[in-house]
Image (cartoon, rainbow, N blue to C red; front, side):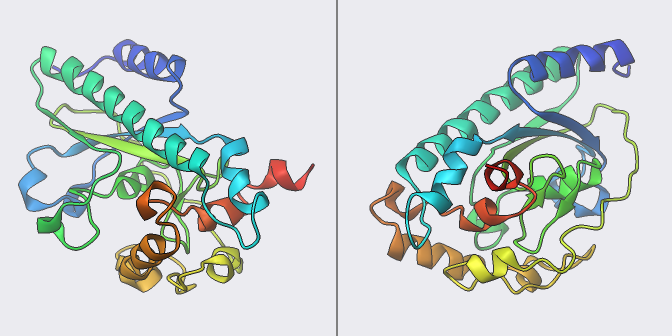
Length: 238
């Protein structure tokens, strides 16, 4: 049995009415770890972060730094997304499907250093929601990287449309120049490239823990996200 178009629309309308900004569907294929290939479809949830909170990162201090508001917002949004993936999982299991919610933020050592069980941005790009930037963050043409993502993997057949991502960052190097950890290489994302080609997660993590220990024990930064021109249009127009 496959979800009907009305049922899919009902699922999306519920999520959108609850505050989710975008919903996408993909079939990750070989990008899935072997252990999850029995769940070949992915549902992506995109939540837009508060512009007022993100803008504080680059307006409230010189040099820019994360704020307590951003740390609390980051945690609250992750919890909200996790609650929605649990709801989707329960809905799918009620109709006989298997489903696995992928937490909005996690690091699982047996998947490699600074990695979760599956990268949300991979599913988001495959769903046509858009591209991975030089910062190694997912970038939406509407919201920039000012989003948080979550994913549900499932064996339930979903409508997947193949789309080509937008050209991406072009010659822009704002995130590269702004990164206080010098963790962003400036190379553009290409399909199949390694995260290390774009970004050094260890340098990022060590800088956060050293420089921002008094703000959420060094768990957040957000500078590369805040300076991206695809999210700053409202700030720069003021």
